Image 1: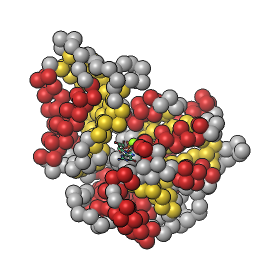
Image 2: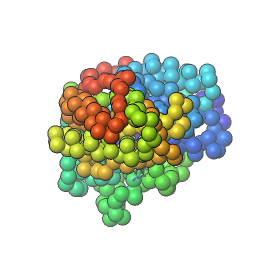
Image 3: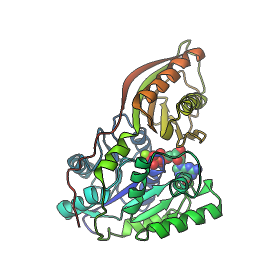
Length: 370
Ligand SMILES: Nc1nc2c(ncn2[C@@H]2O[C@H](COP(=O)(O)OP(=O)(O)O)[C@@H](O)[C@H]2O)c(=O)[nH]1
Ligand SMILES: [Mg+2]
């Protein structure tokens, strides 16, 4: 085996299934005896994804407060930390779901500057089939604004592999139609179909990225003004709160998460805000190993628990990451109201971290033009 670490980046829009896939791939490769490290990236701090990767006990670094492309040196430092700690054979990274131009600003600079240390895999771009069908005009339904869709399509354009995830959510005909449209519009990419959460059909994709290096291709054109405007339409919110049942009675943490998600969803729907990804974790203990997690990836989708707590709790830490097409203040108001409303259930919420913002204009550290 080469002494270079493999660098595998799994991109795709918010909510597509990147984190689920990153954790699946980490497990797949570590079962084959490879040492794996993970790098998570987000615009804010306090990440549900990092907590999930750590709960799976993989060495994980988090780059927060900006994306890989704009914080390239932080990415190198994170990779170096992993190398110092565990000498991984493979580094799997998840970029921010509203980022594009990753080949020119991350993969190629890594290859050109650090090519002796890293072997760069083709860029994977994961899509949710319901979202992708709407974006490609195969279905009607609530969509993002054109500038956000510009980013979505740019993500597809630079993909080496397009992964249609969540195949369990659409019919065989819908899947075929989407797959045909993707192959026609993005002929450079290999298109695969998986259900990451269920572990279906992952090995073709995983073996491909683990064994192949990124192919040379002309740099994609990107209008950074449109891209920046698209990102700025998305509001981001991260909140951490300590929850406590005031009489010390135990409550069902899974039902509590579902209640908070339903409240948030109905408030955002009333504001016409399209949810890109709402994810929340309720941890029962400081180790972060016992947790419940819930996700909602469209305003018209039901929130779903992906991890559940086995036992009732009398207190816990709630982590909320919300990304939606709405002003950040709208997200903050919805979350504040949902948390204050817990009083009716005799639950006190004390916020310990709170930030809401729009991502700033992307200014990549490097941009390699081929
Ligand atoms: N139905 C279904 N849901 C999935 C599948 N893979 C992931 N999800 C769900 O999609 C949501 C978003 O997943 P996540 O990995 O956090 O997406 P990310 O934002 O791209 O990192 C979570 O609720 C996942 O459980 C799948 O194969 N089928
Ligand atoms: Mg994620």
